[in-house]
Image 1 (cartoon, rainbow, N blue to C red):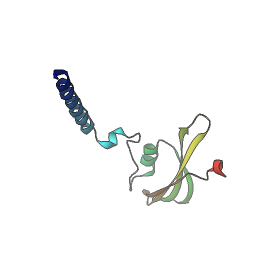
Image 2: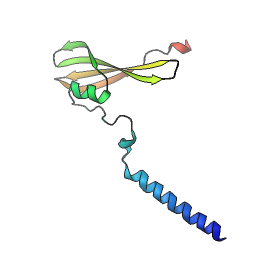
Image 3: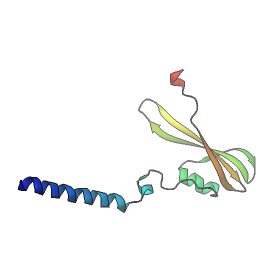
Image 4: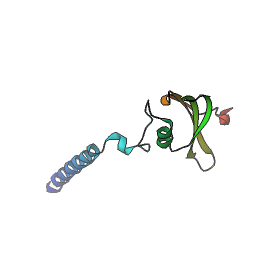
Length: 107
């Protein structure tokens, strides 16, 4: 009986310690992308946040559309490249859209 009681007390202490450790870090600290995209950021900060260079597609100076291609790995057999289109107005990020293309495997 004594061993069961000690086991229950130790379990409760460990659960409390784990819950406290989980509360210590904010949710964003556990994500792989620590610097998310934000509306209003300039192009150089957006490239830094994505970790990929931006390729100019079209638009007048200050009102451009850029493309960022991120190599996210994938399985050992298939390389996964995600395309992200970024729209800038007056030199500031106003929107973005992901394009994952067509899935050729299921045709």
